Image (cartoon, rainbow, N blue to C red; front, side):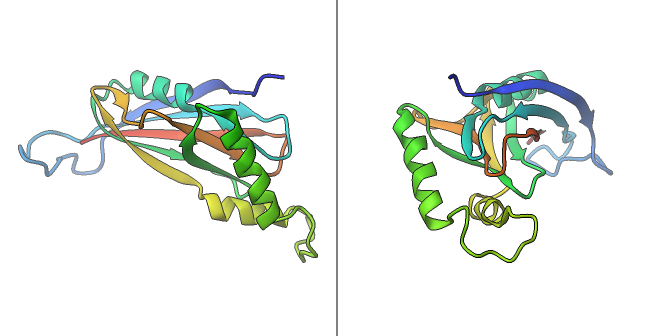
Amino acid sequence: MPCPTAVGATAFWLTEPAGGVYSGASGAEQEHTAMEEITIRTRRQTDMIDITDAVQNAVGSAGIQRGVCTVFVPHTTAGVTINENADPAVVRDILMEIEKIVPLRDGYAHAEGNSAAHIKSSLFGCSTSVIVEQGRLQLGTWQSLFFCEFDGPRTRKVWVQVTRI
């Protein structure tokens, strides 16, 4: 079965911060930010889903040529990371080892029964940033952005903010 991918994008907007003046070399350029929400439907309890294309599409929609792209996951039982996507064994190995480090059942006190997902989310983190140059994410040859599901299956959100610098 193919891995699920980002299924939709909503809520695209541009903003200028209060004051709006970018304090870079010219001092006159205004900072612009574009934000997009990506919806992801996961199919497994624990999974890593490549969201690189969806994030790159958000960067392209923003029209920002040089800046920083922040990818943020607003969930306490999910995360985001950058890792290799050339060999699917890497994702399988990461998921296998994280399960050994933080097993699903281990006498946790949290009544909801998903403590392992909360711990994994904290270990992976809820955001990452990537440099944008010439309208493209500056990822290494083997790097991809992954949404990390630890309490699925669910419908999730990923917020992508691109800021021109």
